[in-house]
Length: 227
Image (cartoon, one colour):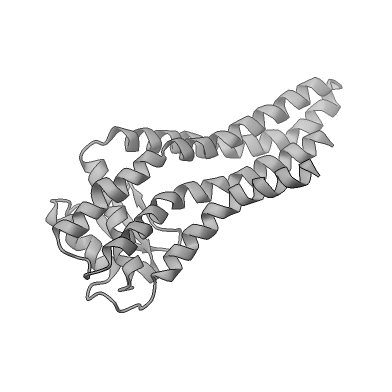
């Protein structure tokens, strides 16, 4: 019974944030013509106003994000071309990351380095875990395979930990950068600030919510290990 309860808690922790984020983003995606500018147009305007003409704005199918290496603010097509409160608020959030980059915001630099290291590490971890049974069979030393397996699980979990500890970077992009931008340039329609705050909270948690899903891989491999 305790295991079932713990399992339900784990599932809630992993899926809960992501479901909440999507609910908030979807809720304020209509009406889709609430603002005169699209998310892409607003991002371009805010970047230009703050001297970041060299930063590109692009539509993408890989999720809203700022790419510090390519110097590009990327929005999904519904936000890039959309005129909803969600579109303009998320656009401001990603511009917030561009401002962090331009001002040399250290937590963003740290996260960029960590993510760059974690990506190949996670791929290597998956390979190690797949090979561990064969290594044990060939060397006839189960401890070797178990050590490799456990090491792989730890490395995969590091990716999730990295995103969790860099949540302050996301919150700064939302409330230290994006919200002041929206106020300074008087972007929001009267009465929308409260809803924009909810969206900015959701935007900050998007990265973390996605990373929590990687815990499922760790749990799956851990279950295999215990068999």
